[in-house]
Length: 169
Image 1 (cartoon, helix red, strand yellow):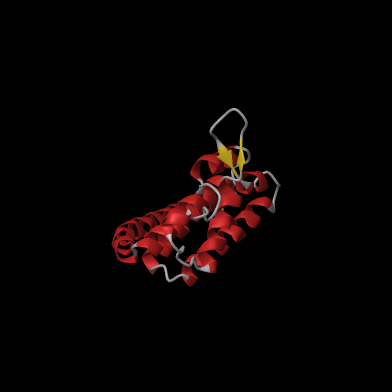
Image 2 (cartoon, one colour):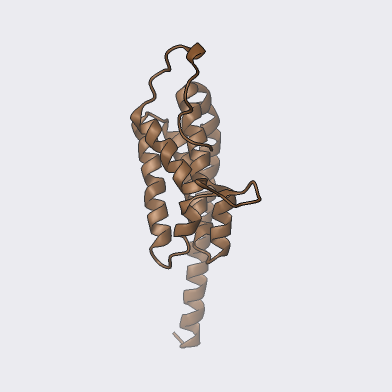
């Protein structure tokens, strides 16, 4: 995404009012995902992958800021299915983002906040159309999350059983 709110030309007439939460979401997505351009390339990155380089706290700070963008979306009346879809973007970012260095490279490509801003702007432009698209994807995200949760539980149980077996318990 480029800079927030381009200036209207005089022939456009009065610009429609942009809600403060949408302006805030645009600014936040820009800062987190594409405020800098790598010289000599078309690659843009923001504070998200940079914060991820800080051991321990960097990813948490990024998640909190991404959560603020979700809060802005909620305040703008985004449907539950769209909000779930946006949350899925942040979860994917969080899961892959915790891998040192590779997760930060993933952040440069994935750009969860830009994805969420596009969904938010589509909601503002045409809420009914986005709501129906998001229900299908939200169902897929929930199914995937349930599968991952069950898989992680099974893996934890298997490891615990193996460890107890080593001690003859």
